[in-house]
Length: 228
Image (cartoon, rainbow, N blue to C red; front, side, top):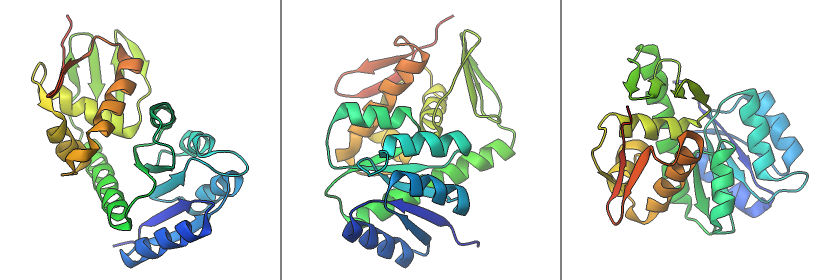
């Protein structure tokens, strides 16, 4: 198997080197960038399979790095933040991040998140190659082979994780799916403490596709509502 490549973007050298060492021990090829401009250049040169990206960077911040990287080539992004601020996290998800970790974090958890993200993207690529059927529910159309979504004929640009979550909800319309189940099925996690990740992605989907599309069942989870 070809060695998978990870770009680590972090200006705190100690953290960057610790993350890189752990990922190399997991079998990845790793390159480090310490500021916004060098991160964008490194992504263009090495074409990583995944990016670990800090929000707070010199030059320009991680949100701008994410925008520029995703504009050139879709790639899974695990965002790191020292601020447990929901607005930062929602903006990060909106510009193309797929997951996030709040500092301080364990290297074991970071490695697990990296593996889970890559597994999801590999499954999605395989599904596209298999010419998965288009899902049509009311005015919602999900083209799985092309990974494109339209509602009432208007295309919505979703991040890869938003798309995967929507497909999973659409597979069982009107059925309430618990947050913990969504974490396990979409993200590949068994960590019940990370259900906020699901909430953040649902908010992003509502913003892009309409607030009436996904129903919240408080204390349980979410269901996709079909509108004719």
